[in-house]
Length: 507
Image 1 (spheres, rainbow, N blue to C red):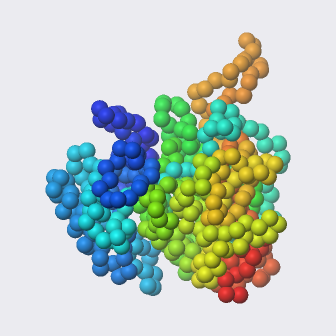
Image 2 (image 1 turned 60 degrees about the horizontal axis):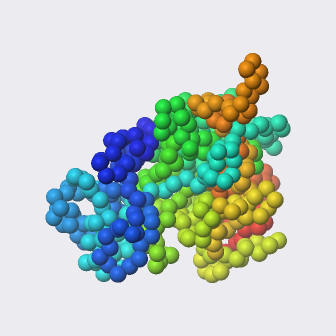
Image 3 (image 1 turned 135 degrees about the vertical axis):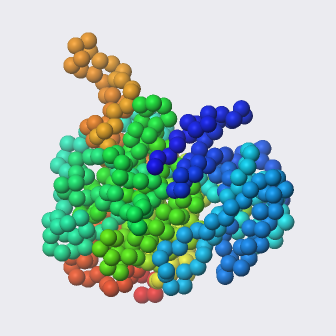
């Protein structure tokens, strides 16, 4: 299953280009951009630009879930008045976890020229404030890569890696363990998959390819394709999509920092780098299920140590920073299970909160020391911290594209990073100059058969920190100092990194 790139399904509807995404059930959804200058707003509130699925709303569950039915009924009634059909589906919950409860439901609306923004505004006007904030759009998350200002033609630039490939500190055993029996740290990259590259050759297992849960991919899309990184998903025939290679690049960063780590691709996007809030939450819950089964000893699964989330969205609400929902709930479930979650901050040079990055607790970054939480009570011993990373330039200054704010936990190198690209990528562009005899030419801007590229973005800063955490976890296992609690072991790794939180909550 692959994503339908923007503008390729349905052409135009006579008024605007049609952008579409296909979800994990194979259903194609139109994507809309909310324009505050044109959006109909009945309630007294300000809205900001956002991207969303045109035919699906999400109801976030209240404690106990009893009030959900009231909101669903209100949406159904408003839809019926417009001659639209409604179907409801529940958010997934991993396994049969003790105390697990429904996090929300999706309301799918079908009919001619559906736009759920109008339903949301109408239903929200009649609901009390507590209920109205629990009804929201299914936001479209976009990958955090830089497309202007850094690199040839403002995007990826073919490059050469002249050093030796990364070397493990422990001899390889099987995919999940070292030769001396240590469990290798598992870093899940929730992104576009991992393509072909010599570093990730099956004969020297680094990437856990084609992993299934109950016979289906963990993520929205299947990673078992020959080039799991969306090649040659494209907007034009033969053209490499601007986001293609993103997951492979991130995998290469993790591998450079922690060569002993297992890289687990969870494919949620294709060449456009877009995915929906509902589908990302579903994929994370399936990843959690895979993790819990691995912890319990299921040999077909494995425990996950770190998750890299290099994507995000800006919400339409401008007057609240306390937005909650199914995606935040899925991240909370992972953290309660001892999984460290590392999120990129975004590439708009902005301080506007972007989610999930802005769900990290507010901190003060202290030069030469660990970050200090503004509200220590935000850090709970029973949960791993949510860690948000922004990008620095090669000289250590903050990159001009890098988002920043009190919710940014760490700064790592992310401008002009050098990492892996699928060796199958060779697009239609040609070198700007070539000698008549063909012996010399300038760099071919979309020929990545050499396997490496320079690329910039906070997406590539986040896996640096993820790799550092993986190193700390492996060192604790090798020394025999890892605790029996996965949450405590994760917190110990955070402290060991050095510039993150300096103490474990409650210690």
